[in-house]
Length: 207
Image 1 (cartoon, rainbow, N blue to C red):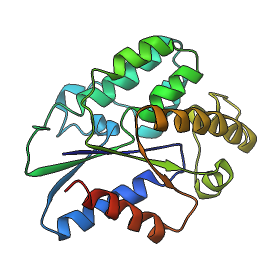
Image 2 (image 1 turned 90 degrees about the horizontal axis):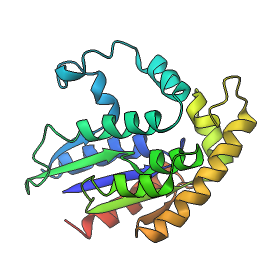
Image 3 (image 1 turned 45 degrees about the vertical axis):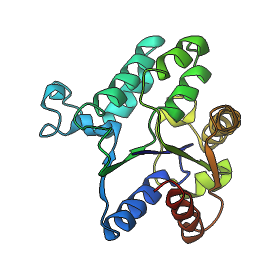
């Protein structure tokens, strides 16, 4: 079973996915989180050992890439992290941290062909459930500890205003995709506990 956690930067995806993993494991489910940044784990992905950068530097380098090369690298990093497991195994639940959703929309906003993006994402396995965390950019900003250029309109000397501007555009497009692709929307403007309770209810419906 595949469950995708999607949302803009600062929407709480990573926090909630960890809480969900612990809850499911406590209920005797076999659970694994799949994250595109696992490509930096040489033990799990030795074929990616040519990438020697730390994650912080890698994120900056990705933002500096121009055109479709950036989109292709991001989609490659997502797709390769899906290759080590039998995703059809009925006794496992795979939680997808971010998956392709945010990057697909971001890449369109950054100039990639929407037609190419839509055709490319069709190659990814379809989740059994996609949870979209809808958050106000101002609330997302208050939760962020650090920022990357990619989250701020690819501005090198970015400001909080750049973050708010990009995230507003990103959230508007992702909300339209939530309707287009039938994602389950959860308001991320609530407390962690309130959000988590809604996640549990939605997952219980498909278990």
